[in-house]
Amino acid sequence: MDNSEVITLLSRREIEKMRRAGQLAAQLLQHLEPFVKPGVSTLELNDEAERWTQAHGAKSAPLGYGGDKHRPAFPKSICTSVNEVVCHGIPNAKQLLKDGDIINIDVTLIVDGYHGDTSKMYLVGEPSATARRLVEVTEKCRQLGIEQVKPGARLGDIGAAIQDYAESQGFSVVRDFVGHGISNIFHTAPQVAHYGSYGTGKKLRAGMVFTIEPMINEGTYEIEVLKDKWTAVTKDRSLSAQCEHTIAVTDSGHEILTLP
Ligand code: MF3
Ligand code: CO
Ligand code: CO
Image 1 (cartoon, rainbow, N blue to C red):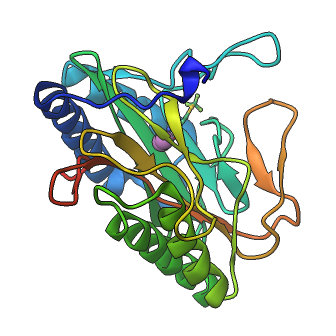
Image 2: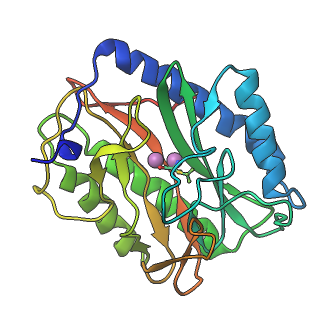
């Protein structure tokens, strides 16, 4: 077996560190709420997030992350994914939010070496009824996925619960991005698909920590990555929504580590 498939079990001490990082990340999402208004640029949101993060003694994990021979490192501190952007939107001074937009802000903070990764949807002014329904369904998908998490359950149970509900509501589940193990490493095993079948995949064990971050599309689940090599958009340019928590498997079930 490849070492990249080994799922590390975190100690109580490590989970306590994950809880501190997760809580601060969740607090940052709360802090940003009043800034998300028509006319603000996604760069202004980024800069406020970076300022707040530094003021709280933490580090933004996305800044400078993920560069390789195929793409540049991520250039900003948060991801801002508006409307048809599925994930990894890059904050930009020219991108101003407007009435009716939906935006996902995804933050990952490093505190004492450990990562807290969480994201949420914000409504700008008054989005369409469909946009609001997409956001509600996405939030419920995350919740249904989390409810599957307990020792002895399987990774596929999470994806199945999410896919069943999203598709029952007439929406689709993105395949190309998945949740991930997270600890002192940003992205590690396991991969947590947001689609799948009950009773399949690795068994969950207490001490595993991973994200659940479904991306749900109004139309096709297919995506395209733009020329910047980061921004993922829906192939049909229909709306997409996402929300994320970092979850620990506990002896009795699970704990959401990214609560404010
Ligand atoms: N926070 C994202 C996730 O949920 C990852 C962002 S990587 C970045 O996994 F480089 F785009 F910031
Ligand atoms: Co994540
Ligand atoms: Co994230």
